[in-house]
Image 1 (cartoon, rainbow, N blue to C red):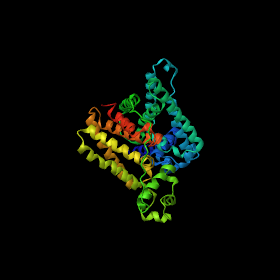
Image 2: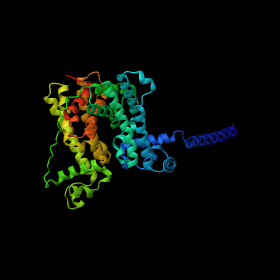
Image 3: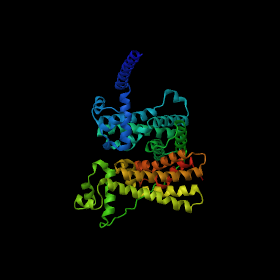
Image 4: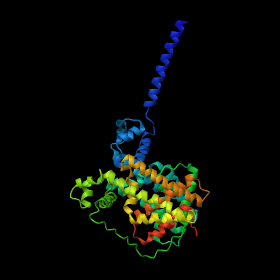
Length: 420
């Protein structure tokens, strides 16, 4: 009996070793789609942490592989970044390519077909969207030109289809509506609101169609001249914030030094900056905290003064648009560079933003009780994204995209169409 038990134990140990060896071989086996896995992980990393905030080692650790294995597929971080950015651009371009079978469709149906294809592509690549949305400025010139051509094709096709479906629209109005539709789609990369694919598709489809069908307020052709706020030279704290944000917007956060900020603010040396802030990250955090607090602080008074949720939400929309027009650079930099804020302060900012979005969403559910809380949060994010994207495309002084038009489009997205 002892002999048999010993033999059994030995056989068991041998089997365990064989099993371990088999498992090891399985782990070491290179997946057929490894390159696609690397591209997806890198795109998500670039989108969440910024191009300059990610290393090849970071990407390798996300995939649980060595950096040497990563370099077997891609020679550099930039090669990864370039390939994924241009892949996303090509997917968008392919989505607006109508099949031959669409020749017999009505203009409205052709527009709907393209929007459905764009929605499907956006949802499939949701986790990668922030790369294209906020980090493409770091592409080299030739690659940026390729991506620019891809995105220009998408916009041109959408404008053309809008014109065919709605002949009354002039070219500037088609440009505004096309930008707004694409903004709604790309906004899902800015957040992680969990919604099942089918429900997300339905929600995006309704929002995009509401935008495409809306009637923009008339444009009187008069440019809105933003009022420049002169900051006294003695207010060094304010000058630092303002000049830093301008530089971050123009060059990108990683390409701006403390010395650059000091020079722009009229300070004699970079050491003068450190009397106010510990570094660039703290300057960024201070500007963002001020903007986040302003949005948050407006909610209580708006609700208290309103007759109901629709009026309160409309007031908040108007205040948000006014603030954005006054600080266009900050609105963009907030989304593009928040990953560069120190981690602890970034958590605080995210919490303020999340609570503000939740309050807006509660008001929206009060207006549209058929929406779930998640549906409402997603639409709030889409409406806020409109302000950023329209501002990037048209600026603050183009009459074709006036404050009233931006406010109207936000209401259309949130309320599901035009309301009296």
